[in-house]
Length: 389
Image 1 (cartoon, rainbow, N blue to C red):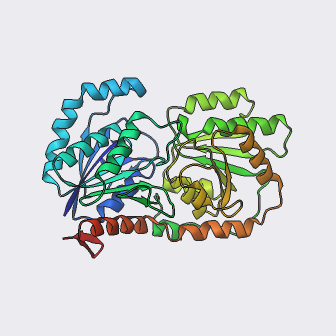
Image 2 (image 1 turned 60 degrees about the vertical axis):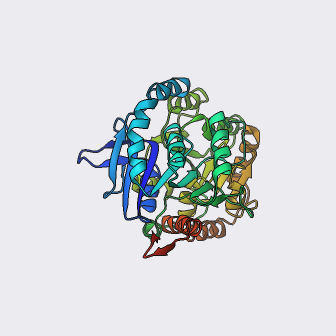
Image 3 (image 1 turned 135 degrees about the vertical axis):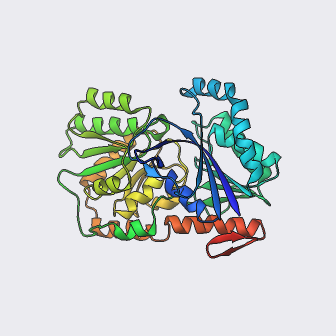
């Protein structure tokens, strides 16, 4: 069986001509590729960026034009080029056995519509918060409506998150990860280390409005104004459209010495930074299942996160694998930061619980779980790790 994956994820060619991208996308595409005999990967070509990770080496890469701009300008650009996208995407969908569509996103959403019209087997994987938030758009509401309406049978609908019951009829939960078993085994971590002096914390992820990084900087400003000592060193690891504004915010707040912007990092560089730090802060305003939670846990780092998406069951009760605060509440975030930095905590036990959690949530297990869901719905079986009729 072959699969065609369609994504709006910007990708580029490195000096050797390999197609690469950043974040967990390349590794997750490798996980999906492992379930099938062949893969065609439709991506948007972009300018070279930082921290490039190769796409699956044996996949057929089909680059398409990236819509221009952001927000309204991007929507106009996408609609202006709609016939072009239909013309390029449709032949690949017609020739394939299965279409994989990571959502949300305008180009993969178009792929969902075309694939369903052609009655193809689909794997729709929704990566944002299934529970509605103030950041939910009309596009995400329509996406979830389609998933609920068409889920079941040949249409495999999965969403990142966790819970005791399915999110909706015909929709399944799945965790999100970019952590391979090989990488997990290679990560050195010291479970017995306590809090550093000064403490080190990190945010890991895209620098965009829904990630709430500005709230983290504002919370650190509160600690500085209230005279907390020692002030933690905060590393912002990642890139995105809000980077310049966040750098200006940190400078205005007098946090130039405390907040460092590391930019986009590949897996090796990310691991090297996390090994030097104490805990992570993920203040998202909306989230499904953040890959950064597992990256932190793998290094023995607990996570202070907004209580959105799957954060509750993943991080657990207060102090199990981290701590939870209401999304968007800067004062609550500052208060919890102060507690983490000041209260007596059994750091070695906390670090061990974090590491143990990742052992059953590697990329290989993630791909296997998706394969099992597909095989069950399609009345197929898994043979040698691949889906077979």
